[in-house]
Length: 19
Image 1 (cartoon, rainbow, N blue to C red):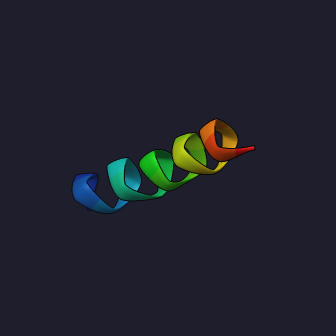
Image 2 (cartoon, one colour):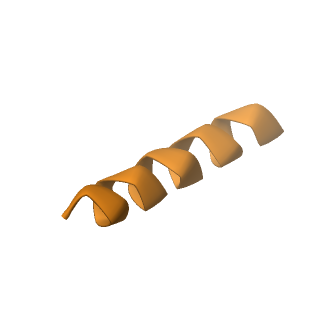
Image 3 (cartoon, helix red, strand yellow):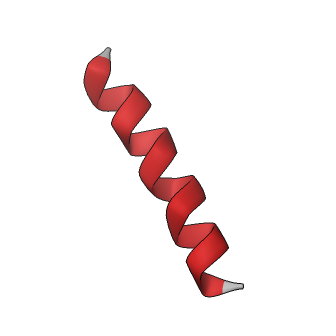
């Protein structure tokens, strides 16, 4: 469960970083 939260958070960070 914690891993899923970190995974979604990482994806959002990457998306913001790519913009």
